[in-house]
Length: 145
Picture 1 (cartoon, rainbow, N blue to C red):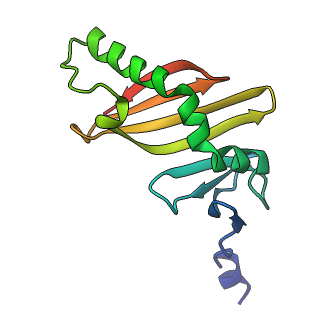
Picture 2: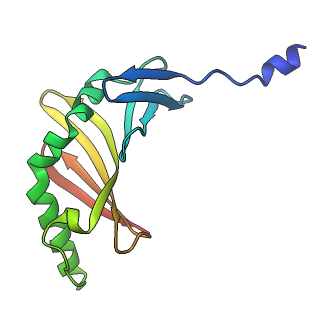
């Protein structure tokens, strides 16, 4: 009987927040990963074994405000990238061609925040763009295909 208990699946850990239910998906390392996919955007935050980091959740609760702060920078970054790659620029604003799939928070402190936005190209769904945001500056931009 003890052998069957060894393989028994642990119950799923969840946390109810103002923006929905977060589920613990990675629990083996020192940093735990919690996910929420109740809206069209997947939110990913770190935390401990019992709870996601509340500062990260509070940040994500206001993600639209944070995105508005860098909205023009995002558009410029996409246009610059397309110019550099000599691709047709058939959009004036990033939302005309891209949608946000995921927002991942890494560090959220009063004077320091580090997070990443993953975009899907609506014209070419095999391409995903990852944009790192550090204290309001766009610090890294990569493409996954």
